[in-house]
Amino acid sequence: MLEHGGNLTLASKKYGIPLADWLDLSTGINPENYPVTVIPAAVWQRLPDDNDDLIKAACGYYGCQSLLPTAGSQAALKVLPKLRSVCKVAMLNPMYREHAHAWQRQGHAVSTFTGLTDASVAEADVVLLCNPNNPTARLFTPAELLDLHNSLRRRGGWLVVDEAFMDATPEYSIAQHAHLDGLFVLRSLGKFFGLAGARVGFLLAEDSQLARVHEELGPWTLTGASRLIAKQALLDAAWQQKMRIDLVNNSQKLANLLSRHGLTPSAGTTLFQYITTDKATQWQHYLASHGILVRLFTETPALRFGLPPDDSWKKLENVLISAHFGV
Image (tube, rainbow, N blue to C red; front, side, top):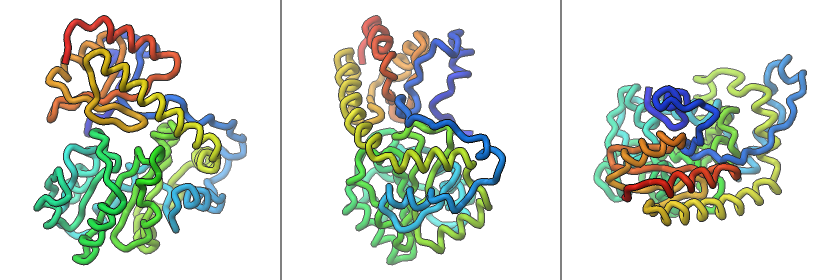
């Protein structure tokens, strides 16, 4: 099992700080989540309805022709490696490691790359990347990715793009092209909408590939309650527009705050800031000892800070002020 952010229970035990006293900035999840409606009792008493117009709402939001709802994008990324014979896979590095883990578990050979012109990309049957990248926030243009997809498609290859952090920058999405053969786009409601606990994701791809994934996953991939919440969130254009503005402002506010205290971000998205520093481990331990959990990366020493809730900015600032070491 790979390590992820959000391990508050373990942090609480390690540092002796009650769960209620923690500020969790380790996940990159929007702290101002979409307001969840009251779930009617009848929703819990019947099987999920695949004809509830969720797919229509999601296709409209993502601008795609077809998609498959899944229990978070995690469910989809675990199935894709089962749909190909053992092959060569190239993954952006660093990147969300669950992708490599899923392909390796099915026997595929996974190499890494840092640039789209690297030899491992030219030799790969499947290329995996996050856009914007998690954790480095690197952003690829649609033109770059479509060129890469064309190269892969000509040799029967696939391009898998995880757009978990894309919602605030939809102009960079290639969701509208996901009907093309050999292109797979992963989306979810966990980050921008702040609904990670609902476990709502979508796989965008060509219809025959979606049918293969659906066959693997089986029926009722989402609960009825999750479907109801997801449809409302995807249709609420006013909330989405306001949130895009708010997140841009808060992300810049976080970058400014960190920079004032010696943690100048090297990159960031609207939902997190990424800082490379040789003292990443010391900073992570120091912050945790004061009840603030951030994501630590050790291969390239770095930290990822998510956005604080409105009532927690002062706590973060006070802890940063009290630090007695720099980057």
